Length: 176
Picture 1: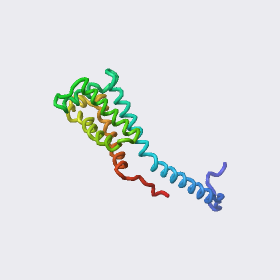
Picture 2: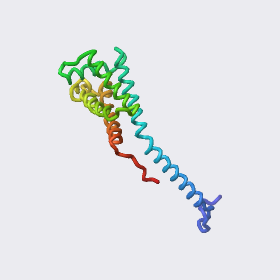
Picture 3: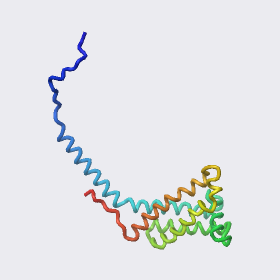
């Protein structure tokens, strides 16, 4: 019967791979640093452009009656916020123009500060249904429209980052 005990009296040595591990660590660190530099340079412009595409797309949809799934909430919200002065098709057209303007300023970088001011006002309007229509959005649990409105909090965060960069803040990479 073979023995089940292991002979521990003679230590077995494995070839040292420490230099290979050190080389891998240096290459990994170098790749991570290069990625960090790349992200520091391009992440905010990418965020600005993608947010611009979203606003432009949503704004253009609102120019065509029946094309936007948000028409009802837009008309309700604008009507409530303007105390009934702007309702229906006019509310939809106003929102379309505002969102299209925001999208174009974010995409092109032209009139960006003005676009960010308009965006700040628009974000207040976009988040206001959470207070104005909480029962409809979250009455018997989260509705699809409630989810649509709550995702706008991501827009608030993105707009904050873009505004900070536009006003002079810089994302830097200390990994070099």
